Length: 303
Length: 42
Image 1 (cartoon, rainbow over the protein chains, first blue to last red):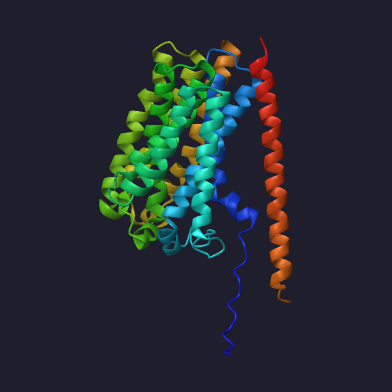
Image 2: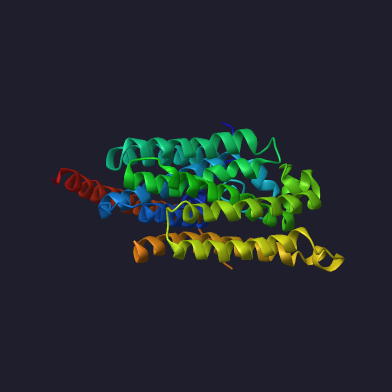
């Protein structure tokens, strides 16, 4: 009888690894914008139903993120920033991540449909497919406009929040969608400018890799210019009061100035340390939180 | 630094996963009760 060497059985993935698959930091932004969409709607919603809606938005986003990590495990292994994620680091079977992602996605849509409404569930399902299939599998590896298209996925939560509260699609949730859609390219391209080497190593056609820094900076400015009137539109169209309008104006002006600094005033020094890009990236997160907080404050203080 | 025994480590991970799953299921049960009550309200 031969004695074959015994293969050690791999350890199962820890619950923390499953948790990290949901991209909790991204989820916090999703929860915040979804909650703002829900609270800014001009109707009151039962707290249990409202909580269920936000939970479903968060779980749906987590499921889509898990599917994204499952699909991109090979790319993640090539990038320093993502090489220690559960799948590329070998702590989790790719199949487990895929099943986890599918379970979260299907579960969130079902609960949304049963507890909140069919329209909100349908939009949630579209947002998950949009992120996990259209963006992750189809367009991200094929076009440098991937971030522009991917921005659509991140733009759904406030729209779903609004629809969960009202049961209806009107101009306002479309504008909330548009704000995040136009905010995403300058936000991510600023990041891509200072982590470019990582994306290049993984072969992802990120704008700075394909079109170069000059073109990326110009496009950041174009989107920042477009974002200002879009963010102001809810006020200009009479859908909000002055508090939101003033906040959108001040925040948009600051966003535009920081984008201008990225697009112009280049010297060899600031090209090397990427200070302007890092500042724009940091501010873009504050911008979104502050703008949506102003939307909710406007609704609650001024009615 | 002492190396962890794989069996002990496996037991620890499975225990953690079971606890997390139990917590999630309990949370879902409470949520479904709450949703049912709200939906049945006039």
